[in-house]
Length: 319
Ligand code: DP6
Image 1 (spheres, rainbow, N blue to C red):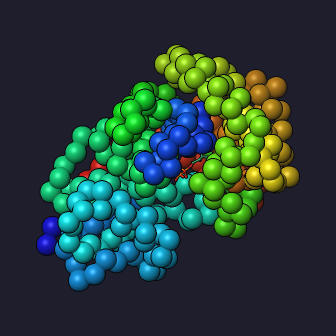
Image 2: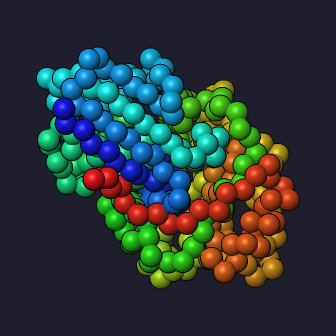
C-alpha cells in the first residue's frame, strides 16, 4: 500500500487574506504575503488504500466537518481514489495562536499526491492546498511567500510563490497569547460575513495592492520599519472591515490592545518591531533577532504566554 509522510510549518500573514471571489474554488479577493514559521509543524501521513476513509487528528478521530474538508481535497487528486487513511499531528498546541490549517493542508497536499503517485510542482501543490484552506497555499514555501490573487476563472494562477528564503533576514516572530478558547467565529465564516455586510469591505480590497508592493520592497531591503508600517496597516484595515460588518466580527480583547501599546512603547525606545493579528485576540510581533529576548520579556508582562518563532523552511517529504 503506498504511504507518504510530509511535514509543513504554519505561516503568519503580514499582508492579510480576507475575502473570497469564488467560494467553491476558494479563490481570494486579495493577494497576501506571509512568513513561514519554525519550529512548529504538522506531520501528516497518508495511506493510499485502506479499509475505509479515516482521519486521525492529534490522536483522535476527526470530526465530520474536519473529515469532509480533508476527503474533499483527496477527491481533487483522484475522483476514483481508493479509501484513504490520514494521520495528522501538530507538534504545537492548537491554542498556540497559530493557524494549524495552514500547515495541515500544505502537509496533506504534499503527502497525498506522493502517496497517490501523482507528484506535482510546488505551484500545483499550492493550488491544491488552497482548496483546503487559503492560507495553506503559502505554507508550501519556506521563508517569505506571496499568494497571488490570480485572474483565471479556474484559479490555476492563484498560488503562492517564494519571495525570499528563510535565511534571507534574521528575524523572530513572537506570539503573545491571550486566549486559549476556540474561536467564536471561524476565519471562513468571518470573512464571508464581512464581504456580505461590511460597507468598508470594498475599501479594504482596494487598499491591498499597495500593501503588497510596499511589503515586497521592505522585505527585499530588510527594512523592518517600513515593513512594520505595512503589516500594522494591513491588519488594522482587515479588522476595521470586519468590525464594520453587521453584526460586527470582533476578535480583539483588552490584552490585544495592551500588546499593541507595548509594541509602540518599544518602538519609541528605538527597538524596531511591529504587530499583526488574525482571526483571534492573539498578537504576533515581528522583530530583528538581537531584540527578540527583550521584546518577548515585555510581551510576557501583558500576555498569558509567549512563543518565540523563527523563519521556517518549505514543506517536505520524509523518506
Ligand atoms: C486572518 O485560510 O483560515 O489568518 O480559506 O476559508 O480556510 P479559508 O480561510 P483561512 O483564513 C486566514 C485568514 C487570516 C489571514 C491570513 O492568513 O492571510
